[in-house]
Image (cartoon, rainbow, N blue to C red):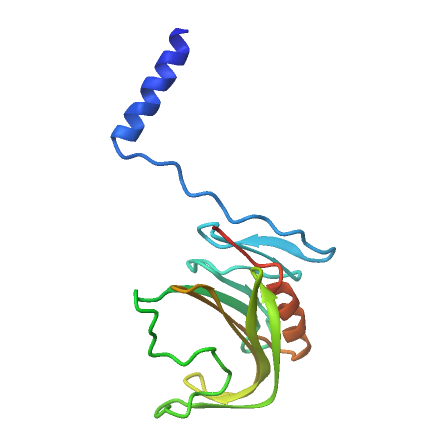
Length: 183
């Protein structure tokens, strides 16, 4: 009985001092054979990715697969943004590969674009794959994927993938279907 009282007293002391248990991690998706379950740095995101991908050091939700002979390699980045209380955003939505018509500097063009309505985190997402030219990095027909979806009226999510081989875009589009967010 004394042990139980001590545990309860310690628990009450921790609450009084403002100690909290860490937030739980995102649910783990079921990964297909040949993919690996990977987590964001804070465990708020989980996703099944092809072999060779790893969380980039110092980044919260950026996974990369280095390609020693290639200048870019393959990478996937996921971002969750909270909107202000009005839900207004200055950025065009949904996101697209090509820059918006209002672009004035470092604009990108896109060709060979395919648009998908895909399911990511049980939400319908706008997904584009194609080849980007220009933009801030100075791409030249770079295979790229851009996905955007609304988690809630005040929380938007997006994913960007840049790869060496265009076929990898479809692989990462399918991988995004396994993405799970902490709720």
